[in-house]
Image (cartoon, rainbow, N blue to C red; front, side):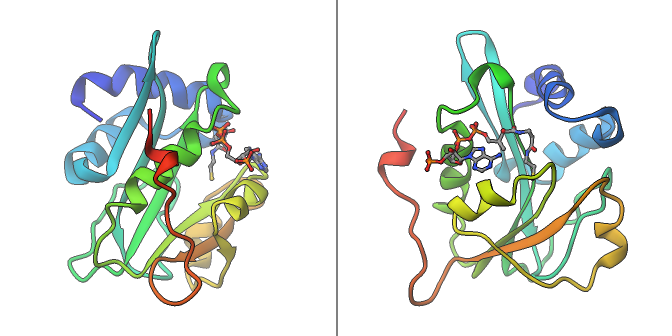
Length: 169
Ligand SMILES: CC(C)(COP(=O)(O)OP(=O)(O)OC[C@H]1O[C@@H](n2cnc3c(N)ncnc32)[C@H](O)[C@@H]1OP(=O)(O)O)[C@@H](O)C(=O)NCCC(=O)NCCS
């Protein structure tokens, strides 16, 4: 994700979330600045069509809706804050590929975590995430509707490895 992608990222957000879940444009810009290595986009022939905002965090922590990222110095978890794919390219495996791209580069981190919203727990389950406990009830409560904290281990026995084929263009 580059600074020039900002306007297109805001448009993808607008197409993917109701007004109550739109995050401020300047917050998106700041996130890109503090976590540039883990904020990525996908493009089609019309430009940016999907994005993933993530940052190194600590297991159990939840980013409130609309909050700035505070990458952890002693991070053990890749926190996926926002994954959005424009409706025009849904169902083509883009979300799976964006997640696989970052997980393949999450060296040294033992888990990945996120908050599932908009009835996406089934989708995250297909990517190896499972419901887990978080003590951050206040942060979870900032999300409208059902918000579920989910975790996927990245190290240890039985860990699903990101498929090489899922990284091909
Ligand atoms: C959820 C979302 C990111 C999926 O994007 P996508 O590019 O269409 O997903 P993919 O094509 O990579 O699908 C990957 C797998 O998940 C499945 N899947 C996709 N959406 C799903 C859903 N809502 N529920 C259950 N499974 C789903 C696909 O069938 C596919 O499975 P398969 O590989 O076994 O066939 C997209 O619908 C979106 O942007 N939604 C709005 C924003 C949002 O809610 N983001 C998640 C916030 S936590």
